[in-house]
Image (cartoon, rainbow, N blue to C red):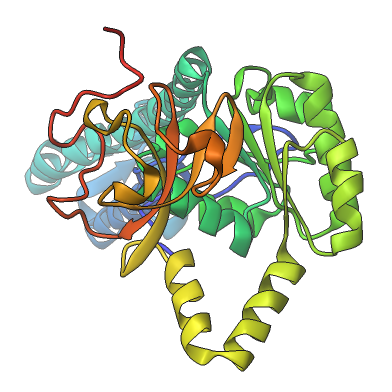
Length: 366
């Protein structure tokens, strides 16, 4: 799990937007300031009480200063009320008031006013950040459920160039909220089967929605709700059991991943052929060894056979249809094709990633 940045404590209001914060918690700042204010009060009380012989109480014939009098004098002095019934009369007591208690009074007032302003400013900043976030949201990715699968999906998106600012997590769990904040993601806390929660997450303008809660029934309901809010967004959903995949597609999911079948096939392959299982695991692991990727066709590759390219082409996407590399329909690559390839996870000069070497893409205008 990625390591956390400093963040505010989660306050999971239903459906509320919570953005990751890099500052300390306002409650930490408030508590620290209150402790400083109490320290000033206690210190001033002790200072007055220990020097009580330098003070006189105009309402007490004996002119004696008790601990209660010291507390009373401190509170009315630091709060600038100053009734004047107790006053320093000795020169040293007056000097202490001038050079010690007066600065303490100023510091006490600054703490109180600063704390109030800080709380108000913090709330204002948060409202401003949320409003600014909403204004620029669009063409983003919404991830419903931030468990193991949700985190892996986000990591894959980020590793392939998607900004964390363009990912929004929807999850009702305080634990998921804290994890997503630690990963620098915006979070909407709430049930993804509720339209108001999805609207707060910006599903109406999202390009893709990934649904990966821990229950197939929740995934189906979430897919139905997402499709109601945004009929055009691309929905990728996971199901635990294969028999639920058709229902998920009927609910509006464009792509359905069956996690139990995928894991089962990988386990079976690893049992029959440990080396084949190792290769399959390598393909599913980002950043090392081999990777499966989709990329644009380069101008220099137009008219060539898929087998002749530096990347190992396994499929060609033409007119929104997927063809295997040996299909006669894609025997020669054409402008506008996209390639599904297996290539080294680390870039090689002979297997350029489009855009990294100023190549012309076959999908570019003439």
